[in-house]
Length: 587
Image (cartoon, rainbow, N blue to C red):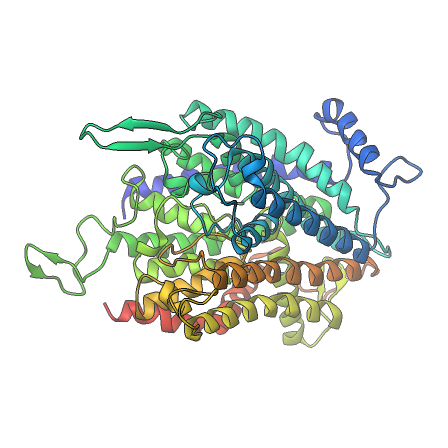
């Protein structure tokens, strides 16, 4: 590991720390309906949206707040409608505008259209297709890019609704879904995305509506260069922790990520809002120390992942030979493991990018995770399995970490024999049950679908899989092939969207099962958390006493990190031991 690599990691983390407080304060003001410097410009637009959409207003001309069940119903209704609309766009794209190359003459197949519509609605952005040869400009802009905004706004709204549950007492409402969506999109996501898109364009990220360009290479070969409205999608792809690329190579493509500066800038965008939301949490519960405690726990887990991935990728593999002599297990691969990595970025930036994108629910990649060393590749896999609460996605990281905070104070209460409390609210049976349900559905989805896909057989040439078995779609046998399958369902259930990319997932079996895994990972986790928010909002504030466990110091941070790691290890160690761990031991 090099000094230059550590310097880049330090600069990245310093940027996140510096921006957490000012942006977190701004988000708190926006989501609480307070006036900000953008309100003179965007306030009339916000009010017009409420009138246009028929959002009910109270006597103060503010959106009427909702019970948690109504909030959840609005979320489900909106998500269902937007998914159907994106499905229709794909099935009809041949007759829609901005399709200069008449891509997909037969339109997108039903199973792939289902997978993609669910993927972008749930903020997963899993792509079982080659974007530049499958989807038109219209679908990329009006479908995928718009969903990048809406799914991120929904996640941010859910997180703030849960925070309201902790901040309020003796009330039955947790906010208004339509107001949260509008404010998150209008005041937070759109302004930052516009600035980010201009920055990316200045560095060479393209933005046009031209057809593809046919060129002749220096060797005389013919090549088609894909173009399109890339920068506008790239900005919200990163800021909204979505991850779906305009090109199949994603952020390894020079039109999406042309320079080391854009590489650092894109990672900064991924963590920008998730990092700031911890401070938003502290502001809204009126104790910023609580927010910094969550930030500290996330930082410890993030740094552990970066250190592990960077170490094993720089070390490389002992299976290579040097000067015709077989190396021993103590020898290092000269230069480290550069397979599957962009030479523009190298090992340090690739390890950092892989850790950041899987700590968040982003899924963008600047290298091939499938080519990482076994333990280097275990890091992004385990990051997602933890629930992507290490900063996490927009909103998803905060509500995921709060779920573990509830479990941590419950365990602390068991240790001292008293009812656990968190932020002045007693954590009782209902809250613990809902947190466990949210956690268990994720594990059940990952392990069930991965297990089924590793053994299921189909009749050859069947509709489901022309190759006869789900395992036939992996490019590697044995432990690595199992890891490819496990990673696919982990990424789908965790709403991440990245892949080992050694698996051919564009078959009806994978398109449908991965789609169902995305739905489970998004909504069967959100609904229990909204129930927790409603339950907490109705409780009275409990005064701090001598027996209250402090939740803002190093002891709580250590307990929280320990609970996250232990729960993740106990849940997934058997599967991981058959995949990346045994593959490492085979080296």
